[in-house]
Length: 72
Image (cartoon, rainbow, N blue to C red; front, side, top):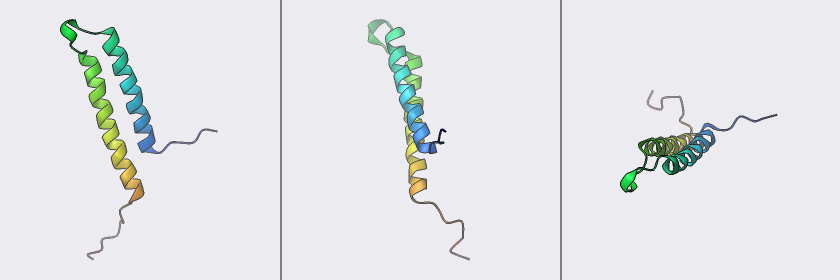
C-alpha cells in the first residue's frame, strides 16, 4: 500500500527530479563558449519555483489558518 505524500514533499521530489534533468541536459546540450543549455536553465528555474511552493505548503501545514473571522 502506498501512502500519499504531503504536497510539500511531492514538490521537493519534483524539484530534485528537475535538477537531475537539468544536469543531464547541460551535459547533452552544452553549447559553444561554455554557455548552458536554455532547456536546462528552464528546468532549474522551475525546480526553484517548486521548492518555493513546497516551503509555503510546509509552512501552511505547520500553521493552518483559522477559517473563523476573529473580527466578527
